[in-house]
Image (cartoon, rainbow, N blue to C red; front, side):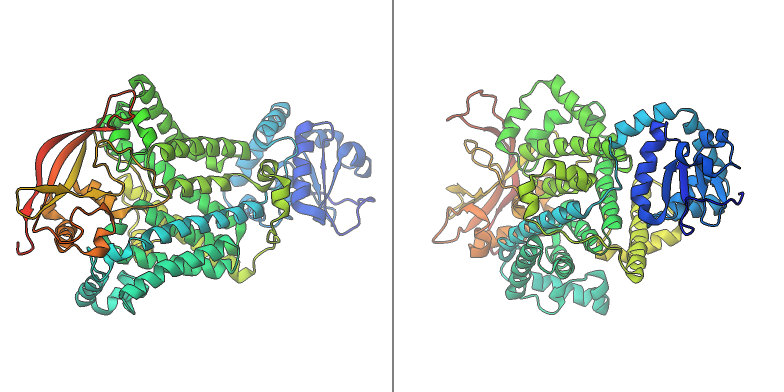
Length: 605
């Protein structure tokens, strides 16, 4: 560094001097100027070189020059990092340059390479970042995400609330009181850590309804931007409680997916940019691991790209459009399967790339989630994933999409740097979340993370702030359905109808998004298992024999409305989509009897 006097400087600010004839240099100088604000002066050497006669013109042409307030000079990569050190949150680059062995040498090599190819660099910059690139802001995106998350929470709480009494109420299939007593007897005081839920204070039907409908009310507050931080914290606590209270009926990945998104949203409400990146990391893991598990499972239907030939008919709750998708040409379905792998395994990496590549990733993921949504009833999980894709866009991109009239009606929070204590807490939480998620991903790949890291991951596991993901690992190639029947005499049998799962072959598959009919879903899983292993199924049949009103409310119809049946049994059928081109008034399904799934029993048995 060489000292010099700058007659144009104000004596208190450094100056970055760049090549004004270089489009690449001008492009990034403008960007850095927006980052640093008034902390650094910027100017082309064509205007300022005369004030620095000791600096050869060749040096100005070779690399950008940083002149400190005290007259010291730096060039090339060092000049870039010194300039960035004046931008909030960018000081770590200079720290890496000065303290990380090998980083400075590598940075200078990269800078020299780019300097030799500046025209190409300018074209690439325009392509990846846009014409007038500015430091990204996420206040609008965070605002919209939190409002949308409130609606997702609302759907989740209301959906469980209308089923709760029949599922876990005092007269439900798996009464919460009995579950709480069993856990209390088994683990004692440790239950507060292993099974954290508010129901330890009361497991009554009133408490269950209070949590469900209280959560719905908090979700509305979040949607309306009223007490968002308090709402997010309480929503997380209440839904975590339902996760444990729901037992086998709350074992789905989208339940922990919602919990993790809700916790990260709480962090984002304190520190926007770190929160946005943590939610992007969640989206990456959810999408990427969903592709990975399909290959790691070894299922030949994924490897030979034939999975979608079975998926639309064998998935838990198809929509009416699934019938049409199932009848698409096999070649097209293979191409669609290959495209799905591109989206799940390739596009997630673009989340960490420049903005326009992130836009590409968002577009592909939104397309996939839309196709899943219109062909399968997967409650709110597609909507939540689409909501996470929103955070791949910065505010500039969102403002170009959204109507000005709509934007004018919203009062967005002012951007402000969080307090140091808050920043440290968010940073520590982020480090913990990333560490534990990496441990889970490594375990899924068959690795063996360090013992200390595994211990930390196990320690926070009950809180479900980090969870492993991976949907549809193995493709079911056939659809077997359980049909429940009741009888007074063991001769004349009447069939019970479920609200959403296939039963009557002439009934069109219904829509139920964003509702999650948990009994119907468990019936799909039960068809893949031995009924002797399913305690809940025998208890369900008991409630059917009792004509329990809260359980019967979960069904579409009760063929014994006045007097409960004496016997109940479960038949096993193979279901396939009909092949008719016109399904009005023809059947939507064909079914073939396979035998008994559960033999005829009475209450005494």
